[in-house]
Length: 380
Ligand SMILES: [Zn+2]
View 1 (cartoon, rainbow, N blue to C red):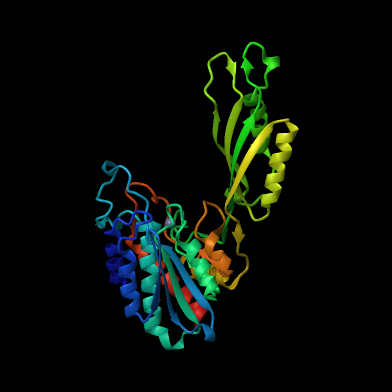
View 2: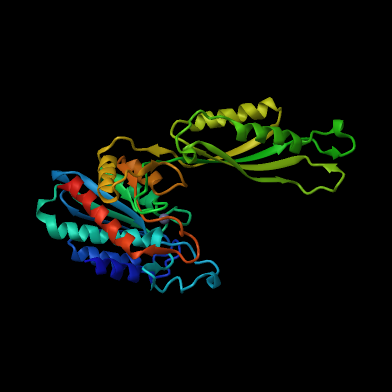
């Protein structure tokens, strides 16, 4: 059965499914799932392919959903790769290829885990297993899980538990899992001052000076949401400052600033907005602003899913995983609208989005066993 993980893995890695192109990955997976007895619904939305697969009876137990994406990021400069990124290559116990860790490896692992589980316990299963896959996670994520979840909710679909196969492990498999993510809020600020001759400073209003005080206060602010792991704290990053191009002896009239807030579940969007406005007013800066909320924060504490995942990892690693909300956003922000308990658990993230992305063969097999054990805990 272990060789079937690698067989499926090799088929998927051979396909250059650069986001949002699925290029047949989901067809291969669907074939595997149909053979296992799943029924499948396709949701093709513009350039994006999505599938929803299910097996079991939702009326006699809980629904456990596995969430994943078949798209990958581009390979980047090919000369940095030891092997062709779309020719799966085994070298020294490792499988190389774009998407091996993020996340065709974990998709292969959970599908084969489900296959083994059904082989052993199909008649004793209480509840239902569902699988939701998209080809638009690495790109703008417009036509992927976000839209499919809306359709599923309309169809009155419910899930109780959701395991996302994103690569959460850091030094060894299962050392870190995610029980939530921070939110992400973007701000574009258009500031207006008074231009003038640089030698007559009192006749102008130098926005660059004023804005530097504003930025300094903003990035030093204590948001009072300290977590043990500082990567979970609310954090502000200024990513662009741009003034109109003037000559050397002029003070510019306009200034553009781009800011991103990664905020924890302890901080509200309104609090951030009102704080920024207060600060701008304090420095008497005239502004227009444009906000974009791209993800709300979420967290999962003390749930049956979290406890089952932690127990399973302790069983395999003899060590508790680090439970974290750090990192960027994931499709968890969309699936959370269906109100399941959510945990992210997957392969190592040390080579994702880089040249020579790889996964250890032993990790693929172990992850599959971990997933299998979790299914047993939840559905038997
Ligand atoms: Zn991913």
